[in-house]
Length: 404
Image (cartoon, rainbow, N blue to C red):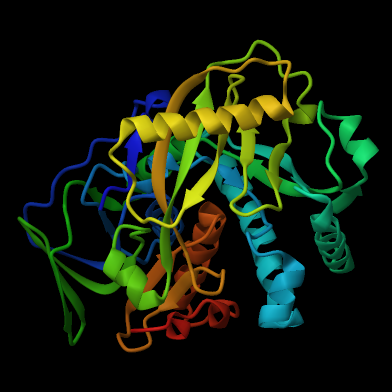
């Protein structure tokens, strides 16, 4: 599958990537991680800290070259599905627990990135979530009340409070604390380098061709070598359309741009991340060197288009949206791209052990909050492997999938 097309920004920001061999022999390990994007890198880093585990990671490309290189790096505890909506769907206890887990995952990411050997440009941020129309004001009020009731870090802004901070006004907004942004590509590369330094063996350009269940685990065949593993973790993201169909997930595509550095972002209040209630929604953030990253215009098509003209046209439309919000900054596009993303049937990620294939785990952060879900997944799977239990695993069980 074409996971992205166009001119990506993040790979240009960090070229000191690790060099990993191709698997050309037969090896064995305790845990095999399939996929070297954000989910795989987080699993490798977390499991690599468990000294009793021998961990191997393989990627069919160079690690981080899939969806992670097209990730826009907004990290939020809020889901695309609002808490009050999730309460109606999942029940109060489970919905609130899910949001608490996401907030904790952000804390875990903050702690993890602060201990890496290099700076992945992780920055604590607040998020402005505004009503796109007056009709959405009631929805935001309900969300504010739900978040406030359960002590999530949130405040409500009236129109005049928004316009006093920004050069635009909206009918209402909520502001959440505890969020963050990151350079996703750089983060993946550093996570993997540090995991390798802790003993994780990493192989690039090593696709998984065949997996066979054995008495003691799995035999996983690649082009030039075989891996015998007790456990296998699939952290393959949106790579496998057939898997997405089995799980009842939808694969779509979204567009994003990065601007040239802007001399002054003074009218962008504290560089809060910005998103809206309309679906598909516009989202915007800044970078360490004063650029704007923005995206949206989601489409119900899985594969990123090869048509460069279409990507440029969508990029111009996103640029117009930035200019509508910030008429004083005159941004210019430096990079524009389109990428595949996935959404689960119920808005929750797929994390945990396959119900019919013991020892086979999945860390699939389907949704608009994939990095946070992947951090959560790495923690849950680590506990499932080392302790046999994690209290949150029931929320994300693979067994809830439509077809297995």
